[in-house]
Amino acid sequence: MQIYLPIAELPISVFLVLGLSGAVGFISGLFGVGGGFLLTPLLIFLDIPPAVAVATVAAQVAGSSMTGVLTYWRRNALDFKLGGILVAGGLFGTIMGVLFFNSMRRLGQLELVITLSYVTLFTLIGGLMLFDAVRAAMRDRAGKPTRLRREAGSHPPWMGLPLRMRFPRSQLYASVIPIAGLAVIIGFIGAVLGVGGGFMLVPALIYFFRIPPAVVVGTSLFQILVTMSGATVLHAVTNQSVDIILAMLLLVGGVIGAQFGGRAARNLNVSSFRLLLALLILSVGLRFAVDLFLPPNEPYSVVVPEGAQR
Amino acid sequence: MRRAALALTAACLAALATIPAKAETLIAALSTHRIAIASNFTGDQLAVFGLVERDGRSVARADPFDIVITVRGPQRMLIVREKERVGPIWINRSQRRFPDRSIYLSVATNRPIKEILSEDAARRDRIGLANAQRSQAGFDFDFDIGRYRDALIRTLEGKQLYLLDERGVTFLSPALFSSQIKIPATAPTGPYDVEVLLYAGGSVLARQTTNFEVVKTGAEQSMASAAHERPFLYGLATAALALLFGWLATVIFRRD
Image 1 (cartoon, each protein chain N blue to C red):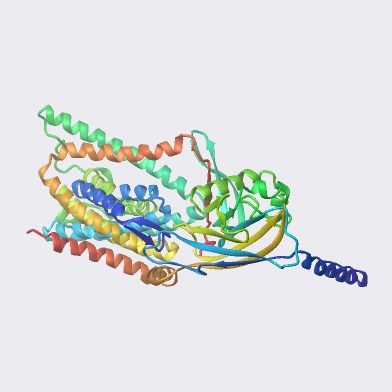
Image 2: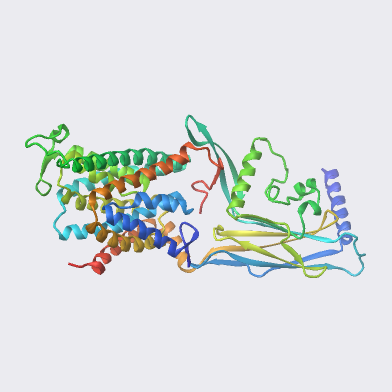
Protein backbone atom coordinates (compact mmCIF):
# COMPACT_ATOMS: atom_id res chain seq x y z
CA MET A 1 0.00 0.00 0.00
CA GLN A 2 1.51 3.29 -1.10
CA ILE A 3 0.75 6.73 0.23
CA TYR A 4 1.78 10.03 -1.36
CA LEU A 5 3.74 12.33 0.93
CA PRO A 6 2.57 15.92 0.32
CA ILE A 7 5.84 17.67 1.28
CA ALA A 8 8.43 15.09 0.23
CA GLU A 9 6.43 14.82 -3.03
CA LEU A 10 6.81 11.11 -3.57
CA PRO A 11 4.79 8.01 -2.73
CA ILE A 12 6.11 5.58 -0.16
CA SER A 13 5.07 2.16 1.04
CA VAL A 14 3.13 2.47 4.30
CA PHE A 15 4.27 -0.94 5.55
CA LEU A 16 7.90 -0.22 4.78
CA VAL A 17 7.83 2.98 6.81
CA LEU A 18 5.88 1.35 9.65
CA GLY A 19 8.31 -1.58 9.68
CA LEU A 20 11.39 0.63 9.66
CA SER A 21 10.11 3.00 12.32
CA GLY A 22 8.93 0.00 14.37
CA ALA A 23 12.40 -1.54 14.25
CA VAL A 24 14.06 1.75 15.14
CA GLY A 25 11.44 2.27 17.88
CA PHE A 26 12.31 -1.18 19.29
CA ILE A 27 15.98 -0.22 19.41
CA SER A 28 15.18 3.12 21.01
CA GLY A 29 12.99 1.47 23.65
CA LEU A 30 15.70 -1.09 24.31
CA PHE A 31 18.49 1.42 24.84
CA GLY A 32 16.53 4.47 25.98
CA VAL A 33 17.72 6.60 23.08
CA GLY A 34 15.57 8.58 20.66
CA GLY A 35 16.45 6.63 17.54
CA GLY A 36 16.62 9.72 15.36
CA PHE A 37 20.25 8.98 14.50
CA LEU A 38 19.13 5.74 12.80
CA LEU A 39 15.86 7.00 11.34
CA THR A 40 17.23 10.07 9.52
CA PRO A 41 19.85 8.17 7.47
CA LEU A 42 17.35 5.39 6.71
CA LEU A 43 14.84 7.92 5.35
CA ILE A 44 17.53 9.57 3.23
CA PHE A 45 18.39 6.11 1.93
CA LEU A 46 14.71 5.75 0.89
CA ASP A 47 15.10 8.80 -1.41
CA ILE A 48 13.38 11.22 0.95
CA PRO A 49 15.09 14.62 0.53
CA PRO A 50 17.58 15.12 3.41
CA ALA A 51 15.93 18.38 4.47
CA VAL A 52 12.53 16.66 4.78
CA ALA A 53 14.04 13.68 6.60
CA VAL A 54 15.81 15.83 9.20
CA ALA A 55 12.83 18.11 9.82
CA THR A 56 10.27 15.30 10.00
CA VAL A 57 12.32 13.08 12.31
CA ALA A 58 12.40 16.03 14.73
CA ALA A 59 8.61 15.70 15.08
CA GLN A 60 8.89 11.95 15.52
CA VAL A 61 11.54 12.27 18.22
CA ALA A 62 9.37 14.83 20.06
CA GLY A 63 6.43 12.42 20.03
CA SER A 64 8.34 9.36 21.16
CA SER A 65 10.13 11.22 23.96
CA MET A 66 6.67 12.35 25.20
CA THR A 67 5.93 8.72 26.04
CA GLY A 68 9.17 8.42 28.02
CA VAL A 69 8.70 11.73 29.83
CA LEU A 70 5.24 10.73 31.06
CA THR A 71 6.52 7.37 32.29
CA TYR A 72 9.50 8.84 34.18
CA TRP A 73 7.38 11.65 35.55
CA ARG A 74 4.98 9.11 37.07
CA ARG A 75 7.95 7.36 38.66
CA ASN A 76 9.09 10.74 39.99
CA ALA A 77 12.44 10.33 38.20
CA LEU A 78 12.50 13.72 36.51
CA ASP A 79 14.34 16.83 37.64
CA PHE A 80 12.39 19.79 36.26
CA LYS A 81 14.84 22.35 37.63
CA LEU A 82 17.79 20.77 35.82
CA GLY A 83 15.50 20.10 32.85
CA GLY A 84 14.55 23.79 32.69
CA ILE A 85 18.19 24.85 32.37
CA LEU A 86 18.85 22.18 29.77
CA VAL A 87 15.77 23.33 27.83
CA ALA A 88 16.82 26.99 27.87
CA GLY A 89 20.27 26.11 26.53
CA GLY A 90 18.84 23.52 24.14
CA LEU A 91 16.35 25.94 22.57
CA PHE A 92 19.11 28.48 21.97
CA GLY A 93 21.26 25.77 20.39
CA THR A 94 18.34 24.61 18.26
CA ILE A 95 17.73 28.10 16.85
CA MET A 96 21.41 28.40 15.95
CA GLY A 97 21.31 24.91 14.47
CA VAL A 98 18.32 25.60 12.23
CA LEU A 99 19.89 28.84 10.99
CA PHE A 100 23.15 27.01 10.26
CA PHE A 101 21.20 24.20 8.54
CA ASN A 102 19.46 26.67 6.23
CA SER A 103 22.62 28.57 5.32
CA MET A 104 24.50 25.33 4.54
CA ARG A 105 21.55 24.24 2.43
CA ARG A 106 21.75 27.46 0.43
CA LEU A 107 25.50 26.99 -0.05
CA GLY A 108 24.98 23.45 -1.32
CA GLN A 109 27.14 21.89 1.36
CA LEU A 110 24.36 20.51 3.58
CA GLU A 111 25.04 16.97 2.44
CA LEU A 112 28.74 17.33 3.25
CA VAL A 113 28.01 18.82 6.67
CA ILE A 114 25.59 16.01 7.53
CA THR A 115 27.98 13.33 6.32
CA LEU A 116 31.04 14.79 8.03
CA SER A 117 29.20 15.28 11.32
CA TYR A 118 27.83 11.75 11.26
CA VAL A 119 31.27 10.34 10.59
CA THR A 120 33.11 12.25 13.31
CA LEU A 121 30.36 12.21 15.91
CA PHE A 122 29.39 8.58 15.52
CA THR A 123 32.82 7.04 15.22
CA LEU A 124 33.94 9.10 18.21
CA ILE A 125 30.95 8.37 20.45
CA GLY A 126 30.61 4.79 19.25
CA GLY A 127 34.32 4.23 19.87
CA LEU A 128 34.18 5.74 23.36
CA MET A 129 31.12 3.70 24.27
CA LEU A 130 32.70 0.56 22.92
CA PHE A 131 35.84 1.23 24.95
CA ASP A 132 33.75 1.88 28.06
CA ALA A 133 31.57 -1.19 27.56
CA VAL A 134 34.57 -3.46 27.01
CA ARG A 135 36.34 -2.05 30.05
CA ALA A 136 33.23 -2.47 32.20
CA ALA A 137 32.82 -6.05 31.00
CA MET A 138 36.47 -6.85 31.79
CA ARG A 139 36.26 -5.33 35.27
CA ASP A 140 33.07 -7.29 35.80
CA ARG A 141 34.83 -10.50 34.82
CA ALA A 142 37.79 -9.74 37.06
CA GLY A 143 35.40 -9.43 39.97
CA LYS A 144 36.08 -5.72 40.58
CA PRO A 145 33.27 -3.16 40.88
CA THR A 146 32.25 -2.02 37.37
CA ARG A 147 32.80 1.63 38.12
CA LEU A 148 35.27 3.52 40.24
CA ARG A 149 33.54 4.94 43.29
CA ARG A 150 33.47 8.71 43.53
CA GLU A 151 35.30 10.17 46.48
CA ALA A 152 33.33 12.33 48.89
CA GLY A 153 33.85 16.08 48.44
CA SER A 154 35.74 15.83 45.18
CA HIS A 155 34.33 17.31 42.04
CA PRO A 156 35.61 18.18 38.59
CA PRO A 157 36.75 21.83 38.14
CA TRP A 158 33.92 22.88 35.78
CA MET A 159 31.32 22.25 38.47
CA GLY A 160 32.94 24.95 40.59
CA LEU A 161 32.50 27.79 38.09
CA PRO A 162 30.37 30.78 39.17
CA LEU A 163 26.55 30.72 39.24
CA ARG A 164 26.37 27.52 41.29
CA MET A 165 22.93 26.12 41.93
CA ARG A 166 21.50 23.25 43.93
CA PHE A 167 19.55 20.52 42.17
CA PRO A 168 18.24 18.41 45.07
CA ARG A 169 16.60 15.73 42.95
CA SER A 170 19.77 15.19 40.93
CA GLN A 171 21.95 15.35 44.06
CA LEU A 172 23.92 18.04 42.28
CA TYR A 173 25.45 21.32 43.38
CA ALA A 174 27.18 22.79 40.35
CA SER A 175 27.63 25.84 38.17
CA VAL A 176 24.91 26.50 35.59
CA ILE A 177 27.39 27.55 32.89
CA PRO A 178 28.76 24.13 31.83
CA ILE A 179 25.27 22.56 31.99
CA ALA A 180 23.75 25.23 29.74
CA GLY A 181 26.80 25.06 27.45
CA LEU A 182 26.35 21.33 27.04
CA ALA A 183 22.66 21.84 26.25
CA VAL A 184 23.47 24.50 23.62
CA ILE A 185 25.92 22.17 21.84
CA ILE A 186 23.50 19.25 21.85
CA GLY A 187 20.57 21.41 20.71
CA PHE A 188 22.69 22.67 17.83
CA ILE A 189 23.79 19.18 16.75
CA GLY A 190 20.23 17.90 17.13
CA ALA A 191 18.75 20.53 14.85
CA VAL A 192 21.42 20.07 12.17
CA LEU A 193 21.38 16.28 12.14
CA GLY A 194 17.74 15.61 13.02
CA VAL A 195 18.67 13.65 16.12
CA GLY A 196 17.42 14.17 19.65
CA GLY A 197 20.86 13.94 21.16
CA GLY A 198 19.86 11.67 24.05
CA PHE A 199 22.72 9.34 23.22
CA MET A 200 25.11 12.24 23.87
CA LEU A 201 23.28 13.99 26.73
CA VAL A 202 22.79 10.91 28.91
CA PRO A 203 26.45 9.84 29.10
CA ALA A 204 27.59 13.47 29.38
CA LEU A 205 25.36 14.11 32.41
CA ILE A 206 26.49 10.87 34.03
CA TYR A 207 30.21 11.24 33.39
CA PHE A 208 30.70 15.00 33.64
CA PHE A 209 28.19 15.84 36.37
CA ARG A 210 27.80 12.50 38.13
CA ILE A 211 24.03 12.74 38.25
CA PRO A 212 22.31 9.48 39.27
CA PRO A 213 21.42 7.53 36.09
CA ALA A 214 17.86 7.03 37.31
CA VAL A 215 17.16 10.77 37.05
CA VAL A 216 19.27 11.41 33.96
CA VAL A 217 17.19 9.51 31.42
CA GLY A 218 13.89 11.15 32.35
CA THR A 219 15.43 14.62 32.51
CA SER A 220 17.22 14.27 29.19
CA LEU A 221 14.00 13.02 27.58
CA PHE A 222 12.25 16.13 28.91
CA GLN A 223 14.93 18.32 27.36
CA ILE A 224 14.64 16.45 24.04
CA LEU A 225 10.86 16.75 24.08
CA VAL A 226 10.97 20.53 24.31
CA THR A 227 13.88 21.15 21.93
CA MET A 228 12.57 18.78 19.27
CA SER A 229 9.06 20.30 19.42
CA GLY A 230 10.78 23.65 18.96
CA ALA A 231 12.89 22.27 16.12
CA THR A 232 9.75 20.98 14.37
CA VAL A 233 8.12 24.42 14.45
CA LEU A 234 11.37 26.17 13.43
CA HIS A 235 11.95 23.83 10.50
CA ALA A 236 8.32 24.28 9.42
CA VAL A 237 8.62 28.07 9.55
CA THR A 238 12.05 28.48 7.96
CA ASN A 239 12.15 25.79 5.27
CA GLN A 240 8.67 24.23 5.04
CA SER A 241 10.11 20.74 4.98
CA VAL A 242 8.13 19.01 7.75
CA ASP A 243 5.99 16.26 6.24
CA ILE A 244 3.01 15.70 8.51
CA ILE A 245 1.96 12.40 6.90
CA LEU A 246 5.45 10.94 7.17
CA ALA A 247 5.69 12.16 10.77
CA MET A 248 2.44 10.37 11.69
CA LEU A 249 3.59 7.11 10.07
CA LEU A 250 6.93 7.27 11.87
CA LEU A 251 5.19 7.98 15.17
CA VAL A 252 2.81 5.03 14.94
CA GLY A 253 5.63 2.60 14.12
CA GLY A 254 8.09 4.14 16.56
CA VAL A 255 5.74 4.28 19.53
CA ILE A 256 4.65 0.65 19.14
CA GLY A 257 8.22 -0.54 18.56
CA ALA A 258 9.43 1.36 21.61
CA GLN A 259 6.91 -0.41 23.86
CA PHE A 260 8.22 -3.81 22.84
CA GLY A 261 11.80 -2.60 23.07
CA GLY A 262 11.19 -1.31 26.58
CA ARG A 263 9.79 -4.67 27.64
CA ALA A 264 12.68 -6.57 26.08
CA ALA A 265 15.14 -4.33 27.93
CA ARG A 266 13.77 -5.48 31.29
CA ASN A 267 14.51 -9.11 30.54
CA LEU A 268 17.93 -8.84 28.99
CA ASN A 269 21.49 -8.35 30.16
CA VAL A 270 22.22 -4.61 30.17
CA SER A 271 26.00 -4.63 29.75
CA SER A 272 25.98 -6.75 26.60
CA PHE A 273 23.34 -4.44 25.15
CA ARG A 274 25.48 -1.44 25.86
CA LEU A 275 28.15 -3.14 23.75
CA LEU A 276 25.59 -3.67 20.98
CA LEU A 277 24.52 -0.01 21.07
CA ALA A 278 28.17 1.05 20.81
CA LEU A 279 28.64 -1.20 17.77
CA LEU A 280 25.43 0.13 16.22
CA ILE A 281 26.47 3.78 16.58
CA LEU A 282 29.95 2.96 15.30
CA SER A 283 28.58 1.18 12.24
CA VAL A 284 26.33 4.13 11.33
CA GLY A 285 29.42 6.34 11.48
CA LEU A 286 31.44 3.95 9.31
CA ARG A 287 28.58 3.69 6.80
CA PHE A 288 28.80 7.46 6.28
CA ALA A 289 32.60 7.31 6.13
CA VAL A 290 32.31 5.02 3.12
CA ASP A 291 30.40 7.74 1.23
CA LEU A 292 33.03 10.28 2.11
CA PHE A 293 36.20 8.34 1.34
CA LEU A 294 35.34 6.01 -1.53
CA PRO A 295 35.14 7.44 -5.05
CA PRO A 296 31.45 7.87 -5.93
CA ASN A 297 29.82 5.90 -8.74
CA GLU A 298 28.11 9.03 -9.98
CA PRO A 299 30.11 12.16 -9.18
CA TYR A 300 27.29 14.42 -10.40
CA SER A 301 24.13 15.30 -8.56
CA VAL A 302 21.16 17.39 -9.66
CA VAL A 303 19.35 19.68 -7.24
CA VAL A 304 16.59 22.23 -7.41
CA PRO A 305 17.97 25.20 -5.47
CA GLU A 306 16.24 27.13 -2.74
CA GLY A 307 13.63 29.56 -4.00
CA ALA A 308 13.20 27.79 -7.32
CA GLN A 309 10.72 25.46 -5.66
CA ARG A 310 7.18 26.61 -5.37
CA MET B 1 12.85 50.73 -43.61
CA ARG B 2 10.56 50.48 -46.61
CA ARG B 3 12.82 47.87 -48.12
CA ALA B 4 12.61 45.81 -44.92
CA ALA B 5 8.83 45.99 -44.93
CA LEU B 6 8.78 44.92 -48.55
CA ALA B 7 11.05 41.97 -47.83
CA LEU B 8 8.81 41.00 -44.94
CA THR B 9 5.69 41.11 -47.11
CA ALA B 10 7.41 39.01 -49.71
CA ALA B 11 8.43 36.49 -47.09
CA CYS B 12 4.86 36.32 -45.80
CA LEU B 13 3.49 35.79 -49.26
CA ALA B 14 6.05 33.08 -49.89
CA ALA B 15 5.11 31.42 -46.62
CA LEU B 16 1.43 31.57 -47.52
CA ALA B 17 2.17 30.08 -50.88
CA THR B 18 3.95 27.10 -49.38
CA ILE B 19 1.12 26.21 -46.99
CA PRO B 20 -1.23 24.67 -49.55
CA ALA B 21 1.65 22.50 -50.74
CA LYS B 22 1.78 20.93 -47.31
CA ALA B 23 -1.41 19.02 -47.71
CA GLU B 24 -1.25 17.20 -44.38
CA THR B 25 -2.81 18.51 -41.22
CA LEU B 26 -2.33 17.03 -37.79
CA ILE B 27 -5.02 16.61 -35.18
CA ALA B 28 -3.99 15.46 -31.72
CA ALA B 29 -5.92 15.05 -28.49
CA LEU B 30 -5.12 14.02 -24.92
CA SER B 31 -7.22 11.63 -22.85
CA THR B 32 -7.13 14.17 -20.03
CA HIS B 33 -5.88 17.69 -19.38
CA ARG B 34 -5.50 17.29 -15.65
CA ILE B 35 -3.55 14.74 -13.61
CA ALA B 36 -4.65 14.86 -9.98
CA ILE B 37 -2.29 13.90 -7.17
CA ALA B 38 -4.27 12.40 -4.32
CA SER B 39 -2.95 10.40 -1.36
CA ASN B 40 -2.96 7.19 -3.40
CA PHE B 41 -1.00 8.70 -6.32
CA THR B 42 1.74 6.38 -7.57
CA GLY B 43 2.19 7.86 -11.02
CA ASP B 44 -0.25 7.98 -13.90
CA GLN B 45 -0.53 7.67 -17.66
CA LEU B 46 -2.34 9.62 -20.24
CA ALA B 47 -3.03 8.79 -23.84
CA VAL B 48 -2.33 10.89 -26.90
CA PHE B 49 -4.44 10.18 -29.97
CA GLY B 50 -3.83 11.76 -33.31
CA LEU B 51 -4.91 11.73 -36.89
CA VAL B 52 -3.04 12.77 -40.01
CA GLU B 53 -5.50 14.33 -42.44
CA ARG B 54 -4.68 14.75 -46.10
CA ASP B 55 -6.77 16.65 -48.56
CA GLY B 56 -7.88 14.61 -51.53
CA ARG B 57 -5.86 16.50 -54.13
CA SER B 58 -2.41 15.76 -52.75
CA VAL B 59 -0.47 12.89 -54.13
CA ALA B 60 0.52 10.00 -51.90
CA ARG B 61 4.02 10.31 -50.45
CA ALA B 62 6.74 7.78 -51.03
CA ASP B 63 8.02 8.13 -47.46
CA PRO B 64 5.96 6.86 -44.53
CA PHE B 65 4.74 9.24 -41.86
CA ASP B 66 6.73 9.57 -38.63
CA ILE B 67 5.48 11.04 -35.38
CA VAL B 68 7.58 12.61 -32.63
CA ILE B 69 5.83 13.53 -29.38
CA THR B 70 7.78 15.71 -26.93
CA VAL B 71 6.39 16.52 -23.49
CA ARG B 72 8.11 19.29 -21.55
CA GLY B 73 7.21 19.57 -17.86
CA PRO B 74 7.36 22.53 -15.49
CA GLN B 75 10.63 24.45 -15.52
CA ARG B 76 12.87 25.16 -12.58
CA MET B 77 16.39 26.33 -12.09
CA LEU B 78 18.52 23.19 -11.79
CA ILE B 79 22.03 22.97 -10.42
CA VAL B 80 24.34 20.13 -11.38
CA ARG B 81 27.14 19.59 -8.89
CA GLU B 82 30.25 17.56 -9.37
CA LYS B 83 32.04 15.74 -6.59
CA GLU B 84 35.78 16.06 -6.60
CA ARG B 85 38.52 14.65 -4.47
CA VAL B 86 39.88 17.07 -1.89
CA GLY B 87 42.58 15.43 0.19
CA PRO B 88 41.18 12.10 1.31
CA ILE B 89 37.48 12.98 0.92
CA TRP B 90 35.03 13.59 -1.90
CA ILE B 91 33.01 16.79 -1.78
CA ASN B 92 30.89 18.89 -4.13
CA ARG B 93 33.29 21.32 -5.72
CA SER B 94 32.20 22.77 -9.04
CA GLN B 95 28.67 23.31 -10.29
CA ARG B 96 26.76 24.58 -13.30
CA ARG B 97 23.42 26.32 -13.20
CA PHE B 98 20.75 25.49 -15.75
CA PRO B 99 18.06 28.15 -15.60
CA ASP B 100 14.56 27.15 -16.76
CA ARG B 101 15.09 23.44 -17.30
CA SER B 102 12.12 21.11 -17.40
CA ILE B 103 12.23 18.65 -14.53
CA TYR B 104 10.13 16.32 -16.65
CA LEU B 105 10.83 15.49 -20.28
CA SER B 106 9.51 12.69 -22.43
CA VAL B 107 10.20 11.94 -26.07
CA ALA B 108 8.21 9.24 -27.89
CA THR B 109 8.61 8.27 -31.53
CA ASN B 110 7.33 5.49 -33.76
CA ARG B 111 10.86 4.41 -34.72
CA PRO B 112 14.41 5.33 -33.70
CA ILE B 113 15.08 9.05 -34.08
CA LYS B 114 18.17 8.36 -36.20
CA GLU B 115 15.96 6.73 -38.86
CA ILE B 116 13.47 9.59 -38.89
CA LEU B 117 15.77 12.54 -39.34
CA SER B 118 19.43 13.50 -39.47
CA GLU B 119 21.37 14.62 -36.42
CA ASP B 120 21.55 18.19 -37.65
CA ALA B 121 17.82 18.28 -38.25
CA ALA B 122 17.21 16.82 -34.77
CA ARG B 123 19.28 19.61 -33.28
CA ARG B 124 17.44 22.23 -35.33
CA ASP B 125 13.97 20.85 -34.58
CA ARG B 126 14.86 20.19 -30.91
CA ILE B 127 14.21 16.45 -31.07
CA GLY B 128 15.58 14.01 -28.47
CA LEU B 129 16.42 14.34 -24.78
CA ALA B 130 19.65 16.27 -25.41
CA ASN B 131 18.12 18.65 -27.94
CA ALA B 132 14.62 19.19 -26.57
CA GLN B 133 15.71 22.02 -24.30
CA ARG B 134 18.45 23.51 -26.42
CA SER B 135 18.00 27.20 -26.95
CA GLN B 136 16.87 28.00 -30.46
CA ALA B 137 20.34 29.38 -31.29
CA GLY B 138 21.72 25.94 -30.54
CA PHE B 139 25.09 27.28 -29.52
CA ASP B 140 26.95 26.59 -26.30
CA PHE B 141 29.40 29.26 -25.20
CA ASP B 142 30.95 26.93 -22.70
CA PHE B 143 32.25 23.62 -24.06
CA ASP B 144 32.62 22.32 -20.54
CA ILE B 145 28.87 22.51 -20.05
CA GLY B 146 28.35 19.39 -22.16
CA ARG B 147 29.31 16.89 -19.47
CA TYR B 148 27.13 18.66 -16.93
CA ARG B 149 24.20 18.51 -19.33
CA ASP B 150 24.87 14.83 -19.98
CA ALA B 151 24.98 14.21 -16.23
CA LEU B 152 21.70 16.09 -15.80
CA ILE B 153 19.98 13.96 -18.45
CA ARG B 154 21.50 10.74 -17.07
CA THR B 155 20.45 11.52 -13.50
CA LEU B 156 16.89 12.49 -14.40
CA GLU B 157 16.58 9.46 -16.69
CA GLY B 158 17.58 7.35 -13.69
CA LYS B 159 14.73 8.91 -11.72
CA GLN B 160 12.26 8.16 -14.55
CA LEU B 161 11.70 11.89 -15.00
CA TYR B 162 13.36 11.93 -18.42
CA LEU B 163 11.99 9.27 -20.73
CA LEU B 164 12.93 8.31 -24.25
CA ASP B 165 10.76 5.69 -25.96
CA GLU B 166 11.68 5.15 -29.59
CA ARG B 167 8.81 2.71 -30.05
CA GLY B 168 6.37 4.71 -28.00
CA VAL B 169 4.11 5.83 -30.84
CA THR B 170 1.93 3.23 -32.52
CA PHE B 171 0.25 3.66 -35.89
CA LEU B 172 -3.18 2.05 -35.67
CA SER B 173 -3.77 2.76 -39.36
CA PRO B 174 -1.59 4.63 -41.86
CA ALA B 175 -3.16 7.87 -40.60
CA LEU B 176 -4.19 7.16 -37.02
CA PHE B 177 -1.67 6.96 -34.17
CA SER B 178 -1.61 6.75 -30.40
CA SER B 179 0.93 7.01 -27.60
CA GLN B 180 1.13 6.85 -23.81
CA ILE B 181 2.65 9.60 -21.70
CA LYS B 182 3.96 8.17 -18.44
CA ILE B 183 3.84 10.47 -15.43
CA PRO B 184 6.05 9.09 -12.65
CA ALA B 185 5.10 9.33 -8.99
CA THR B 186 7.79 11.96 -8.39
CA ALA B 187 6.56 14.20 -11.23
CA PRO B 188 6.57 17.90 -10.33
CA THR B 189 3.30 19.80 -10.19
CA GLY B 190 2.63 22.43 -12.82
CA PRO B 191 1.95 22.85 -16.53
CA TYR B 192 3.15 20.31 -19.12
CA ASP B 193 3.42 21.19 -22.83
CA VAL B 194 2.87 18.50 -25.43
CA GLU B 195 4.32 18.99 -28.91
CA VAL B 196 3.40 16.57 -31.70
CA LEU B 197 5.43 16.73 -34.91
CA LEU B 198 4.62 14.96 -38.15
CA TYR B 199 7.61 13.96 -40.26
CA ALA B 200 8.01 12.41 -43.68
CA GLY B 201 11.34 12.02 -45.45
CA GLY B 202 13.16 13.81 -42.65
CA SER B 203 11.27 17.10 -42.70
CA VAL B 204 8.43 18.51 -40.67
CA LEU B 205 5.04 18.44 -42.39
CA ALA B 206 2.83 19.59 -39.57
CA ARG B 207 2.95 20.58 -35.93
CA GLN B 208 0.34 20.50 -33.20
CA THR B 209 0.65 21.55 -29.54
CA THR B 210 -1.54 20.94 -26.55
CA ASN B 211 -1.00 20.79 -22.79
CA PHE B 212 -2.06 19.34 -19.48
CA GLU B 213 -1.35 20.05 -15.84
CA VAL B 214 -0.37 18.02 -12.79
CA VAL B 215 -1.97 19.29 -9.58
CA LYS B 216 -2.27 18.18 -5.98
CA THR B 217 -5.88 17.72 -4.96
CA GLY B 218 -7.89 17.17 -1.81
CA ALA B 219 -5.98 16.55 1.39
CA GLU B 220 -2.60 16.62 -0.37
CA GLN B 221 -3.35 20.08 -1.69
CA SER B 222 -4.55 21.45 1.63
CA MET B 223 -1.57 20.05 3.55
CA ALA B 224 0.98 21.35 1.07
CA SER B 225 -0.58 24.80 0.98
CA ALA B 226 -0.88 24.88 4.77
CA ALA B 227 2.82 24.09 5.05
CA HIS B 228 3.71 26.95 2.74
CA GLU B 229 1.10 29.55 3.62
CA ARG B 230 0.72 29.06 7.37
CA PRO B 231 4.07 27.51 8.30
CA PHE B 232 3.90 28.46 11.97
CA LEU B 233 0.45 26.96 12.54
CA TYR B 234 1.41 23.91 10.46
CA GLY B 235 4.55 23.37 12.56
CA LEU B 236 2.62 23.81 15.80
CA ALA B 237 -0.05 21.38 14.62
CA THR B 238 2.54 18.77 13.66
CA ALA B 239 4.36 19.10 16.98
CA ALA B 240 1.08 18.96 18.91
CA LEU B 241 -0.04 15.86 17.00
CA ALA B 242 3.31 14.22 17.72
CA LEU B 243 2.96 14.89 21.45
CA LEU B 244 -0.63 13.66 21.36
CA PHE B 245 0.57 10.39 19.81
CA GLY B 246 3.18 10.02 22.52
CA TRP B 247 0.58 10.59 25.24
CA LEU B 248 -1.87 8.17 23.60
CA ALA B 249 0.82 5.48 23.60
CA THR B 250 1.25 5.73 27.38
CA VAL B 251 -2.51 5.47 27.82
CA ILE B 252 -2.85 2.47 25.53
CA PHE B 253 0.19 0.56 26.78
CA ARG B 254 -0.10 1.52 30.42
CA ARG B 255 0.23 -1.48 32.66
CA ASP B 256 0.72 -0.14 36.16
